[in-house]
Length: 151
Image (cartoon, rainbow, N blue to C red; front, side, top):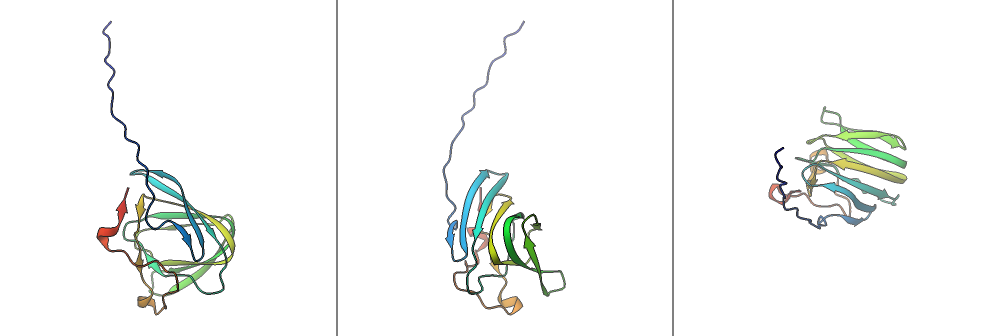
């Protein structure tokens, strides 16, 4: 019987914190799971604020899915006709937001949302001016293509 050699490979542990995670005007964005090159999971703890915080955006690369654990959120989206439609998402509802989809969220009842996506950070393009929306206070700016982080 031939003895097999065991191959050893070097494994590297990396620690990171994406630049745009953390406290927001609408609540907190908390990274809870990240597998490099595969997926990212976040918890969005959203609270009702007295002014509009919804910021129309689209992602160039990010492909995400959100599940509402509790509360309610008003979801804005372009239905493909160039017009913004709305839908109320409540606990148990989910939405898939593929790359290029114009969307925004406004909390109407404190809520917890679990978001999973491909491992892309800082991938936002503001669409407010295209749809005649004003940019709300605290909105994150558009990112340039070279600023998008793939992990």
